[in-house]
Image (cartoon, rainbow, N blue to C red; front, side):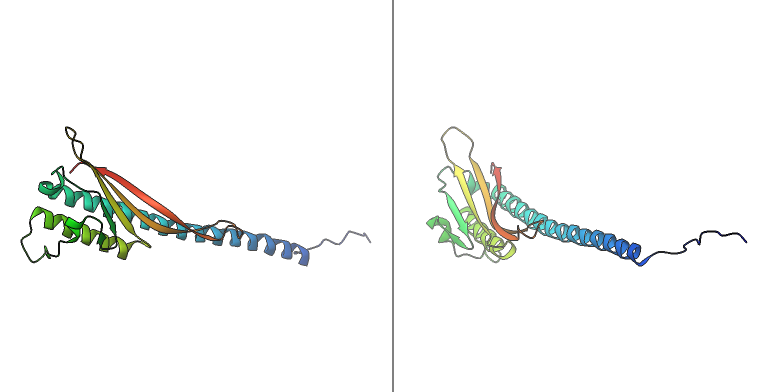
Length: 172
């Protein structure tokens, strides 16, 4: 009779527990990456909306060349629907239903742009600053500001709100 060592078949309970631990850590890592991807998609969406809003106003400015190339432009700040330029802020004509002058159209465009910023972007507001130096082409800087929530990768970083700005330079 020969004595052979008994061969072990299958896995031990310890090996199964180690395998489950490795798999669960991997799944937690994948879940964390998925959360970051969703957050980054949301951030990119808001940044795209800000760029589209700035481009929209730039197009409206180029379409209303009669006002924006006047040379007597005041700096105009848009925060929601409030304009600091009294000339533009005083424009109450609805340019969708009435024929507007260039000044009325500029006021309407800025008011609609401000309302759009406030509705589309969290804490959204904007500013338009135009240079009116004699002898140089008029150029305007369009700035769009909003509050952006960012999620930290680690638990210690948490969620933070940061002021973001998108700036565009346009020659009307």
